[in-house]
Amino acid sequence: MAEPIHFYSVGDRYGEFSNFSAYPITLGKKKWPTSEHYFQAQKFENPADREEVRRANSPMLAARLGRDRKKKLRKDWEAVKVGIMRQALEAKFAQHAELKELLLSTGTAKLVEHTGNDSYWGDGGDGTGKNMLGRLLMELREKLSAKSR
Image 1 (cartoon, one colour):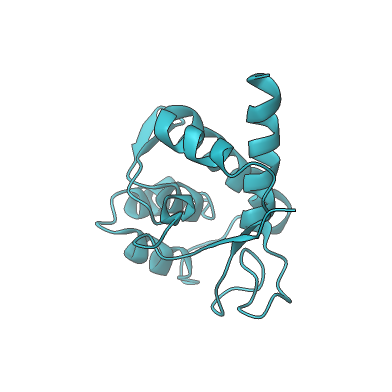
Image 2 (cartoon, rainbow, N blue to C red):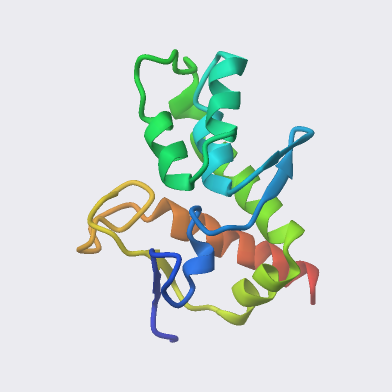
């Protein structure tokens, strides 16, 4: 079994897997600077709030805006967030051939977003987190791999 692949910072090896990596995506007839911008914007009911996030000049600012609870959160957010992340990742890896190749090059290795900052999308830093981002990437890798067989 291959060694797990840890990723987090965009400057590190496999940093392209981070939602902060500078790979624009087009979804919903709009161009988003990063998958983080898209994901964070989808949290909000108000189109003006979503647009403010889309126009944020960095993924860090988009993430900060996405945590702003003065803006009205979608009522169904908890139910739809994984599907929205899946959609963002599918767009990112479909729209950037080099990313698709990088993802496929990881073979069957476990992909882990390694960070103490997040125990839902990441591993919580100690492996106790859900690693949902890593799981979705592995799911996508399997789907892309099946298509290319």
